[in-house]
Each structure stands twice: as structure tokens, then as C-alpha cells.
Length: 77
Image (cartoon, rainbow, N blue to C red; front, side, top):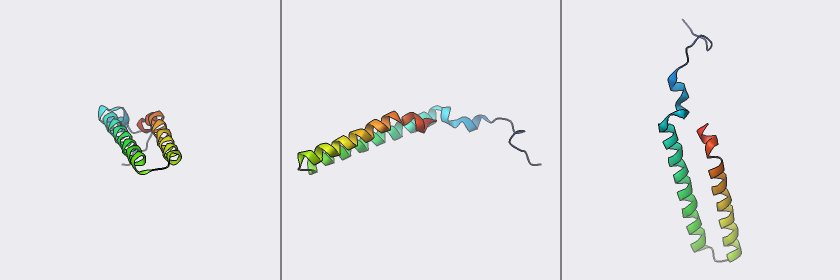
């Protein structure tokens, strides 16, 4: 007996994005992303000699970090 989508009862497990486990996973990914941005920033600061190139590189990393922060809710939904 095959059940179609309309006759199937809603399942509580389908709404996993609202569970606390999913929120912790997103927060862990966010923390890892910012840690990677920080490591890249430190590496750029210590290895790039030209101050203009260093500044542009750090600006690009900062823009990516801001974008990550602003779009974190897109990952959760």
C-alpha cells in the first residue's frame, strides 16, 4: 500500500532545523568559520610585506566575515 504525500501524517522528525542539536551544529560551524578567518588574517598579516596588499587582503577577509555573520540565519532555515 503506497501512501502519497497528502495522506501521510506530519512527522515530528521532519522539522529537525528547530531542534537544539541543529542550532549547536550551526553555531559550531560559525565558530569554525570565524576561527578560519582569524587564522587567515594572522597569516596575511605576518606574510604579506606590502602594506597596501595586506590592507586589501584583510579588508576582503573582513567582508567575508561580515557576510558570514549576516547570512548565518540562511543556513539555519
